[in-house]
Amino acid sequence: MRMRNWLVTGSVIAILGCGVAVTRPLPDPRLDRWGVKDMDPVIAMQTTDAACESTTLVSTGGAFPKNPQTLAIRWTGFANFELVYNGQIILLDAYFDRGSVFPPLGFTAADVKKADVMLIGHGHVDHMSDAASVGTRTGAVIVGAPVTTEKLLTQGVDPNKVRTVNGRGGEVLKFNGFTVEPILGRHGEPPPKVVAAFRQALGETTTPPTKDQLAELMAIRARGTSDKRVITEGTIAYLITLDNGFRIMYRDSGGVVTEYEQAAMDRVGGVDVALVAVSAAVINTLTVQRALEHMRAYRPDVYIPNHHDASFNTLWRATEPLFQAMKDENPKLITVSKGYREPVCFNTEYNLQRRRK
Ligand SMILES: [Zn+2]
Figure 1 (cartoon, rainbow, N blue to C red):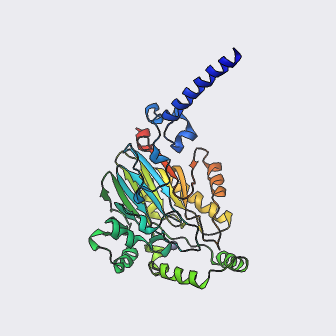
Figure 2: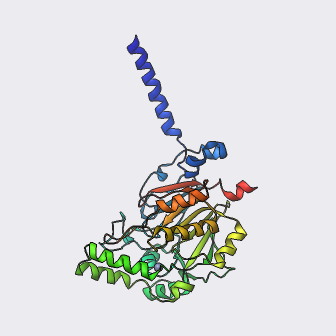
Figure 3: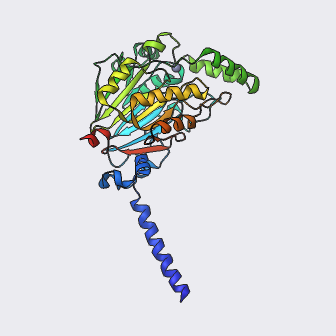
């Protein structure tokens, strides 16, 4: 008798278990943090989607989310992201074939077969080395500062697909289901003394690249620029606004917040998601200071870091100290840091602009 009860209970659990699996909500990080009570229940209970669990990029053949309002974000090393929304693929930066001194990303530039828009934050090698090949193969529109697109155009890219922007205001690029506003940012300028000391320490404690690895790195380096203009007039932040009002701020270098960024943020009042580069200043007190500056300017609900991974003979930049300091100041902030290609999905119908109405 006791056994039969146990079996009955067991099958009820099994049935419930199946039901839960089928109706599991979309893994929107805001849902985890704020719970269903603060979100529109219809939106909060949107069921999950296999496309929000797969580590295959949509640009390399993975599935689009079923609901066009779902935004899937995948970080792919350094400041690279793939954003998928409304059947569109947006690539932020393009530095995929990094050489054998880097941990593998799980795909190569040649695997990227589909993209509609590519936004290049700046022209250093570790942000644009695969922009030309991926742009040519996919036919994507490529956006960048003058010093970036100058370099791109030496690499056989169709000039009709290139948009040169200066980010000093008044430039709004319209795409299918979203707009992009380029905003002049500023490249990171970590203290030379700190950088030199750590470089020396790393040189003394890690295995240097082999001759072949150095040759490989030089070939990759040739596809980026080291023009000095990158620092002051070549680093572009992008404010992406989806048609339903959901806003994303992207910046791929950890420099100071510029007057242009501040003005744009004062106008819009904040963003749903900020994808922000961690400063290269190594020392946590310095990187924290910059992250707080970014958070105060962009006022995001969700902060996702970038540019924190590294080659085997250098150090990853710590994100936890930033998260802690930001949350100490803003306890409602949600921080998300995933591994390469792991998706983060958002139901964009729920967003700051809608909530304010
Ligand atoms: Zn750079």
